[in-house]
Amino acid sequence: MGLSLVVVFAIGVIFMANLFTYNQSEVTIQELSVSSTDEVLLQVHDFGGLTLQLPGAFAQLSADQAMALETEGYRIVEHNLVGLSAELPIMGGKTYKAMTFNGQVPGPTLRVTQGDIVKMTLCIPDDEVLPHSIDEHASQLSATNFGAVDIGTCQTYIYKAEYAGVFKFHCEGINLAAMDQHVLSGMYGIIIVDPLNGYRKLMVEKTTIENGEVKIDRKFHSADALEFQLHFSQLYLDENGNYDQQALFQHHASQNTVNGLALGYTPNEDLNELIMGDANKNIFVLQPWNSADLAQYQGKLMYVPTGQHVRLFVENQANEPLYFHLVGEIFDRVIQSNYVQAKGQDTHLIGGSQGVIIDLVFDEPGVYAAVNHDYGALFSGAAALFVAGDFFDLGISPSYAEALGNPSDAVPPMGKQSIAHPMINLHGLYTDERAAEVQEMIDNGKWQTVQSQD
Ligand SMILES: [Cu+2]
Image (cartoon, rainbow, N blue to C red):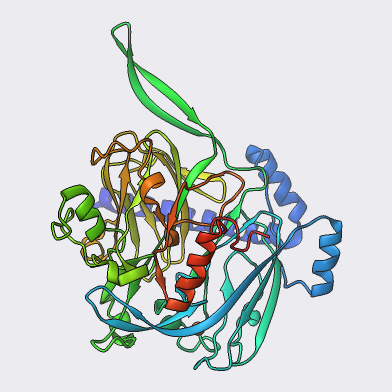
């Protein structure tokens, strides 16, 4: 008994000593951080030579300040958005009460370069039924800027895009009220901020055999890439297509979407005809947007050549985790801003309102599904198909993109290191008015460059 008491006492002393040490060090850190920032920096420097970057929050710029910065050599880029309610189709032949920027879901992508001054204007037309607002995550504005813009008025915000990466923008509802409804009904989009010094070239590691020995074979691809944007989101609807907040609170999504459409990147009847020789013979198990009569909503595939650097801008616009996976491929690199987060990864977890850039090279001809590997999400719409190379033996080389084109809503505006898509088709959750505008831009060859590039 004496022995065990000694043991307990000894443990008690160690425990007390730990507590004491913990308290001491805590006090020490507080003292340093309050009284002597220089000393802390010195200690951090001595500790491991870390370079601290201390970003100043960027307050909204006035028009005068923006003009002065332009004179100094900064570029000003406009992002003009219009808040519009609309009735738009959902998988299954029904419609839902959508809220949109510019009559499209997702809203128009803005692409700028690090250090550009963004002049963002949100207008609410006289005949719109609700006020809307805007929060651009590429900015570092005080939240007091995100108040509702009234019907029949416009509001402009100006900020400098200081960080490279993919950033969400979204409606903040009416002074935060019903923000969930506005965003999940379609008022979301992305801003791509390209790094000032460019993306890095892509290293892909494979194995090879040399003199009977297995060796690492490194291949370097130029930073120039064929690019796609994929916005994953969810719809929470009642049977009449109205927003259902209770469904959101219970995490019961009605459908999952990629770029606004559930299973929108699946084959259609034209492809049935081309590949199967019969418009009614489906190639894929799920083809909910089959008919050409569905116009801009008809299913389309995304086409890539093999052996080419492909860059995906992936944003989780929704309320559930996105387990981003490309069935049959491994991501060669995952980056945020211009910093590597992962290499050789099969599935990357993307939290709500988070975006990443995925670099990969499709090695083999085939069909590859970009999915949310949450099975509930996948089977309710979170799947989009890529076709690499001449998988269907049509004799089209190097890519079907030249003959069949890629869907307009999956193609972001061009950046300095973008490889141009050879052909683009009208496709997306657009109102008819917006679809006509997009078609005109495609016809005039402006789709890849006109969107807010200058
Ligand atoms: Cu809104």
